[in-house]
Length: 430
Image (cartoon, rainbow, N blue to C red; front, side, top):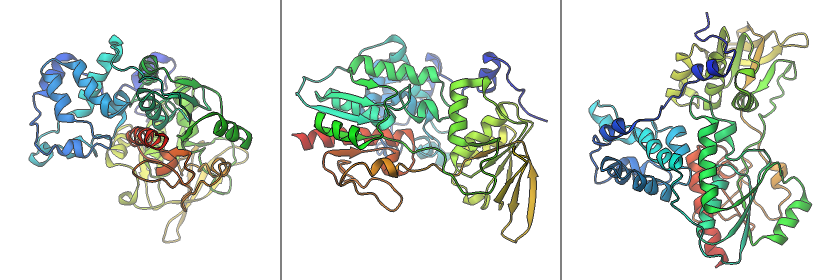
């Protein structure tokens, strides 16, 4: 029996996907901020990829200086609101909180961060302005977290910035690829508008850069180029039957759900293949969409899964069943999927029936796009090689960040990379 009823309208969809980290009110934020011990070595701050001064912004919230708190956050991380909501805080800042050593719940740093940043976004408090125009122009390919952070930082340094984005909305996977119970489209896009209104960078939507001619044009028109392209579509695994009706890529499925909500088609019996965080999201979402049976099938043991433990527990809490040591060997069905054949390490084979398969088996890299750029060296995993101090690539005109250099990490890593690259571009052009 499904834990969730299939949503028939937007209200039912929102009820099934209610926020995992709901917004605090001022009283909750006051009391939660009072719990901070202001540790002298701030392990929470050391665990944050963007190095936000967490004790300072918490003290600012507690003393009523919410705008100051938001400024402290944004000074370190241009995606401060999104990261407060979608960051895996349990393994980053909150996971490092000293309260964990005392069997006391850690400080809710993510929700406090979200409280402060949402306050200034809702009031449209202007905190930044572009630096004096320095006469130089930078092109950014991709309006994901890395590209947006790079654009914001470059504008404060006086550069003219044009972002070229293949899709019709900004922020990459933050709006297209993260489960809706982690953040809403409205919240993501409100932060994007807030930043763009203050800093005035240009975004050209539905403008995919796909040819050598376009690359040459950008090289002629701009002083430097930042590559903030994410990963590609779900990778093809050459699994027999992979092309049957009812087989979906996890990334594409999550995007469809983020854009179309209750109108997204979800089968009755769903099998999700994979063991990473994307697999957990796809499984959780299928269950919340009212599938009567959702099975997460992973080829290794539960301990070997790449997903965070809390993500797996979230999926199980939504009614998902885990099956381990199960390698898919064939997707069965006559035109449409009817089941998946699995093999265990012992050699035993078995079939599980289903009417939908979601492949969360990794994303294709952007190798063919990278090959359009002269002198761009990649590592053996098709990631752009960069100088870790500046994020400059082996072609000096190009800088890169986010999934293009790390192969797929968190929003906060992209925010860090984009800012670092902007500083690198500034140093190089000067």
